[in-house]
Image (cartoon, rainbow, N blue to C red; front, side, top):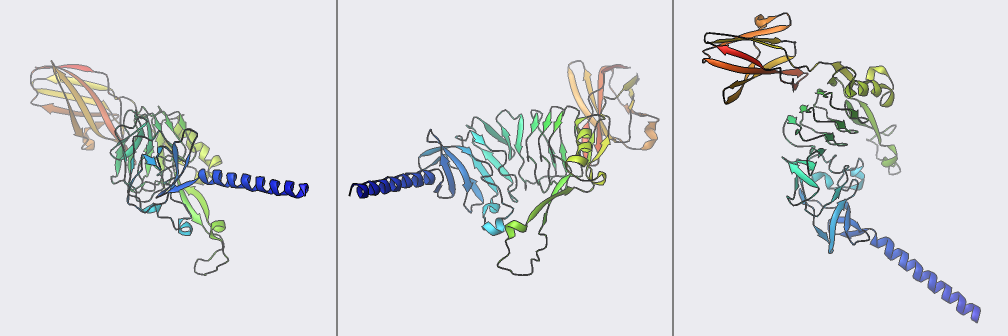
Length: 381
């Protein structure tokens, strides 16, 4: 009898323990409305996935009374197998991030095919948005440029030092991105699958470039499977393959011995199997121009160092307390003599001018300004 009682008690204890484990496991992954989340030791919520169908998603500050502070890895990512999962996440057009969010995985929002704007509550202490683009609070890191954001040209703000992983991943409409000489690091897959961009100039300030950052695209392969055959025993998740291949015609511009050149050399061994698929590198020199100026009666003549990529130049004038800039397009090869471009300006007012110049250059549709030249003083009679 005692043995029977002991056995029954053991079964009850095991059953109770099993129930506790089941409850704890359930509590670790909770579904609430459009969200799946978990809580940490402080009772704060981390969003694990979005399950809704909204075009415009406003992430809540609370879920079931738990303050939402984190968005986990790929919580808002479109699955490669979404047609199997019947995911609705691809309908998202905009995302609004509340003030409570303290941490967002970089691998969020990057593969949503129709997202065009990301908004952040002004009271958020860790993140901000500028014209629909997501940054950290002090805008030293560009986190995400929305995939379907309209506009063919984008200039990275001067405050940005790091282009984050998958920051521009798969952008549909961008044709040109201008990086300033403040950028020091470009992380992996930052410009992956940007098929409309034919070239980017990487300034010498950039010291590190991550794998697959430039010149690569994503393709799908289904192996032996014929999609026209309806076979209930075929497991698509096992057959769908992602293949990384070179982006044809893409050119990375940079200075000799720069991180850009090293990246291109590395692409043959690390990304692709042969030299033919290597990311193309073209060396350019972004030096400040040499300026010469001569003043006459009512006339200013200038000449400056020239190369074939220059499309326009900008003059900065100082006369007394007055300062102003004027831009001019480069027209006519007759003004070019050897390595110098010459032109003149009439009806200049009398006085002493301090002048400096910078030029704008075009590399495969991508525009870059040179540094300013040394300042030259000129007296107009």
